[in-house]
Amino acid sequence: MAVHLLSPTGLATPVPYHHVSVATGTKTISVAGQTGGSIGNRTPEPGDLATQVAEALRNVAIALAGAGATFADTTRLTFYVTAWEQSKMSEFLEGIEAVRNELKIPDLLPPASLIGVQILFEPGVLVEIEATAVVN
Image 1 (cartoon, rainbow, N blue to C red):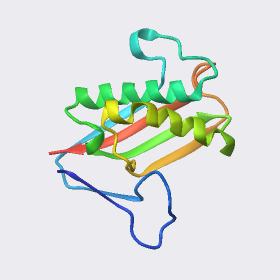
Image 2: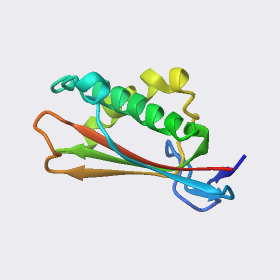
Image 3: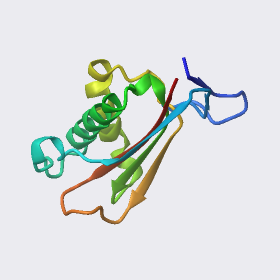
Image 4: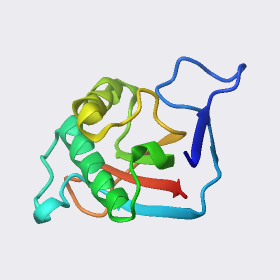
């Protein structure tokens, strides 16, 4: 496997992701920000963060597969969420859990950042996800 995930002792826990990824593969894959409205040019479900997170993750999986990768090969995820506040965390995590088994997303995500933003490229888009992966 080209990616080894770890969380060294002394870093904040519990968190739903690993703190470090070590990649030894030969091909790096960068996935542009994916939203919940990309499949078939559908409009994202307005106001439903959990559904948009799940759909955006499905789109990330499609992009990874197109390059011969899966979430197991992912070294980093970056989530951009509009009007972020801590009270949205349970709905955000609900979206991940909704597709975890379907997309074979590990119990602990690779290193991840969640960045609150004022607005994304289009009204109604609540989340955008970027990914980096490495394969042999």
